[in-house]
Length: 75
Image (tube, rainbow, N blue to C red; front, top):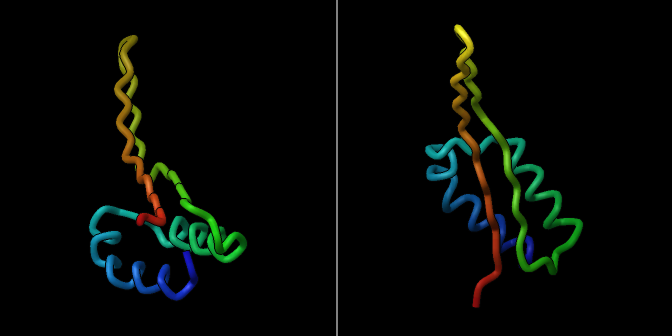
């Protein structure tokens, strides 16, 4: 995937990425990896953006919000 096409896709879906909760860090890491390996077929980045843990009386409740960003070349 070439750099120009990647940047076009990121701009096109910037609103959707923001709505889902993709952080600037994940976008930057994805962009950096694609710049290092421009012929990569896909790039996958995962990040936990929010975590909640509650413990009481021998019980634990844990909730996480995870973001999975996949950029792939498809034919």
